[in-house]
Length: 297
Ligand SMILES: [Zn+2]
Image (cartoon, rainbow, N blue to C red; front, side, top):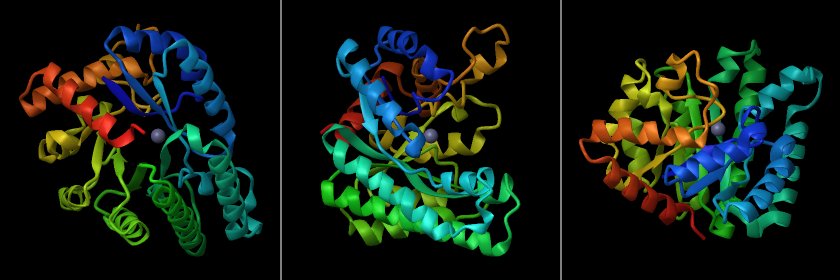
């Protein structure tokens, strides 16, 4: 099994990473793709990946990304309302590029990155102009990362999230990928929760889809539908840890570890195998092959 999307430098994964990796390996775990989101986690994640790979025979792959929601987080947290968001964003993009260029040989994926039209409406109260600016800087950053993916032939791990029923975020992301990549960018859509219509477009563009613990939740009907419609050879698994613990962990108030972590992939594959009507072993095998096809150098 593999975990194609996890944040190892985030608490409490960071403090427990050795035992979490050991448990993952003991369950036949083979590969973990560590994602990053902005300058605050690049160096720490890179150092962790290098050190842990010495001990656990290269179990970790590295993703270097720029998460679209980091722009609005900064706008809010640093009270940046008076500064030029475009200048601020350009600085983040430049910092990204520096890290990318100096660590290129260690990078297996560009991620996570993409567009997010969810948080700017749900978590904050930005005015209309700020909202439009946020969308524009997200697009600028994403375009740049797509260009780097294409120039360097590195696959991408893409985040696209919007409010229920709004397809514009995924539509914008797909059109940027198509335009910048000219059909050559290889990628996975992580935690896709949008419409089946858009799913078809994602699949038509040759992309993979990452499934996580949402398929184990009672509220996960729409994602279980997405899984049913996704061909076996396009399925990846992920935890998005430390977020999204599986349903059995959420229910068990006595569980010692209550966060998303690579070992929980086992429960996710079990649930997915039932939904797809195939054996656990077969789904594990196919999805591991998918991971290698997309992310191996
Ligand atoms: Zn993530």
